[in-house]
View 1: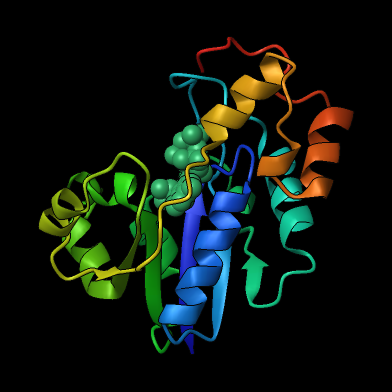
View 2 (view 1 turned 180 degrees about the horizontal axis):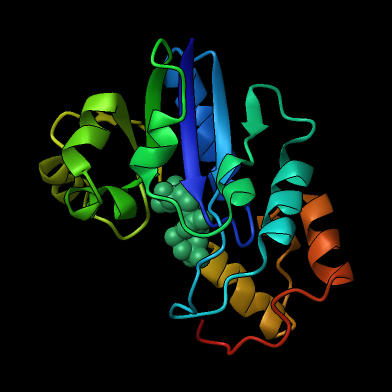
Length: 194
Ligand code: ATP
Ligand code: MG
């Protein structure tokens, strides 16, 4: 089994995530791609991350009808933040793992907990990200596979700002995710710059 893992906060999941993952599926031979929402932070970080059940539900709604992309709730179920290496080690050792990251995340991999174990357990697959230099990412993770695609200029940060400012954001997320955000009043009262 060759499994791709795309971790993130998914607050909210957006079309950049799903389109980039679909591109991975067409360029790397994988049996499945798992979207893995991160567990809730123990302490407040720079902003309040939405509770795990909201992020998990939005991820489910976005992927329900998408072949090849699945949701994995193990990090949310475990509660609290998880190191990537713990997640990788929770898979059967017979599984070949592909850790999918945006170029922004790839740049910081060497600072991750047990980074060398992460790199030996999984093949890193890097997605281009608007405004991030791919050569910097390639220097940070020389052994990575780079997906060839035009960067998709969407971030969850932008979506949260649009919601907060009461501007249209539906074109950036799946329709059911837009409905979920509205019916649960997500992001409506976070400061605009977060
Ligand atoms: P935020 O703005 O809150 O950081 P985000 O849009 O970066 O949100 P994350 O949940 O942080 O989304 O991202 C999860 C993973 O997906 C990260 O590895 C990130 O680099 C990658 N990613 C996010 N958006 C894109 C995109 N538009 N294209 C390619 N990769 C992306
Ligand atoms: Mg991010």
